[in-house]
Image 1 (tube, rainbow, N blue to C red):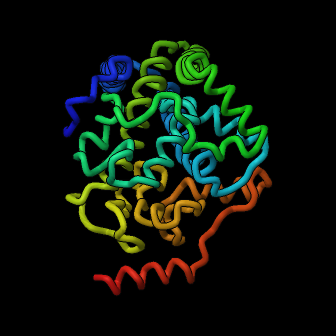
Image 2 (image 1 turned 60 degrees about the vertical axis):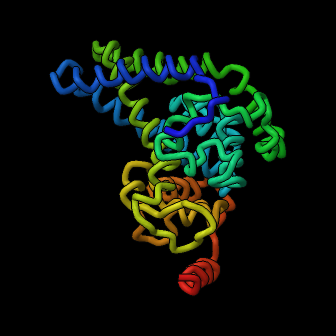
Length: 298
């Protein structure tokens, strides 16, 4: 892991991640031993989907890139689902991801892949970035364009700790209490599920930008972003990362029907039932032009 001498350990993050991983791995161990009830294992899977899609559909494709539009109720649901993943507030997450697109592989990219695999995977969370000003959310100014979104995002930002504890810890504990397994709800559906969602998300910053993984860059070679159907299998479709860096505003990461992209399917069905609208879809001709341009530079 490549870090600068000026960078200091983010003790709060390091301690929480250490504790979460210890409890989470114990949860998997206990599951293998049959300690948790079947309903608790199902709850963990449901919570995994809710929190994972809360990041991919909510934090990423809606709040960051505005690849579709939705009303107040749906925005609130996406905020809650994203909160269960405990990946910080929408303001912080969106700010960092916008900077990632603006400064990919350069100084100022929060998860700069040029600094090594482990730094882009998890090191950026454990060490304070001296180039990042605390409380600077100017990269996420688009969140203030809509008054309701601004109020929702500010509410979450101001009450994040309470919301995260409630939705990611208390809710699965109380739910599992219905069948007499509250500890399993907290440990397995809470922490075990959480560390899987974390590393699922981190794979986009590390593996999908890792040159040693392979070279699949059919749409742009302006940066290290790679397409990987394997990564998409564990990230709800976020593995088509080269396409995403070429066309960040598209509600799809996998533009073709055969691409495994559950997040685009969720957004599409939200559109079909009237809970989403104005889906941003890059024209096929523009996609093919990008592919031809890459081939010409090969």
